[in-house]
Length: 234
Image (cartoon, rainbow, N blue to C red; front, side):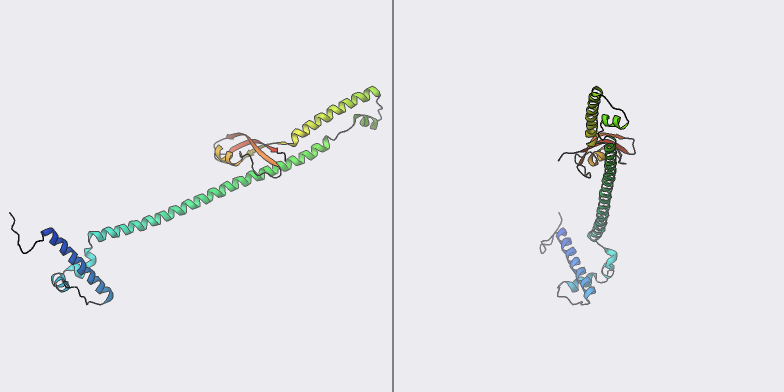
């Protein structure tokens, strides 16, 4: 059985803990003295600790004898600094990616918008030409202008022809007036992108027009859409 001195109630582990605490306080006082230049202290154990450890290298050169806790903390600081820098760079990359994505989507919409405006302008020009070509003309007046005088029966037949032609022309003009077939090649990468841009029921068209997407096809590099730009009623 191990003998113990009855004058001391502390065991070896408690003594070691106490000594480590004294050494820590002793080193802290030395570091403060080095920083401030004031070596005076009221700590009662300083003289004894200086007598025991004052000439040891870990006191004279403490940098070489970093504790495990100090090394761990230094590594943690380095890791935290690296992670902060990494998160900052990742956030910057994400913001740049989002900016480029938004810019690309806006450019796609602008491209489609310009194409629709061009198609609608061409449609207006065709309508003007159609108006000139389909103006109602009386067959009787045309024959009279050419020196032909139709009788009563032929005049009635010509009137029926004029009425039928006028009805047909009116129907063609009505259909053509409210419908423009377009073929769009927007250079997108998938059908979903195109549906989000051109397949919306209320694409921003000039004037009272809306887009109805009819079909989508892709060749792997670009997406083409065929649809109808229809004139909506107010």
